[in-house]
Amino acid sequence: MKDLTEVRAVEIGRYIVKNKATVRSAAKAFGISKSTVHTDMTRKLGDIDNELYQQVRQVLDVNKAQRHIRGGLATREKYRHLC
Image 1 (cartoon, rainbow, N blue to C red):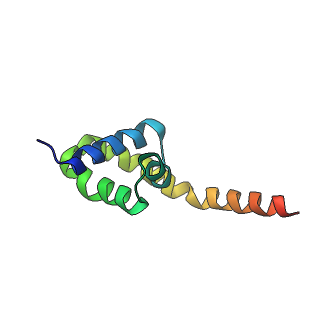
Image 2 (image 1 turned 30 degrees about the vertical axis):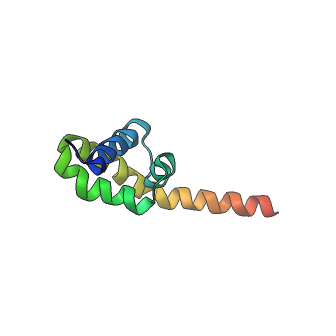
């Protein structure tokens, strides 16, 4: 029988691929910490389901490449409301 962490890793991986979700949004959806999601995706999922791992990796790489843009937009919105 599969370990609960393996089942969780696969479920989170499918969620990330289906929704093109960030680690933060996946953690919020599953009620766990960002570090747990990151650990499950980077360390455990590759051993469980390599094909899903590759798909998750692509989504997370895109998110990583875009995070500075999203952060800048969030900061802009924050200060726009202060004026």
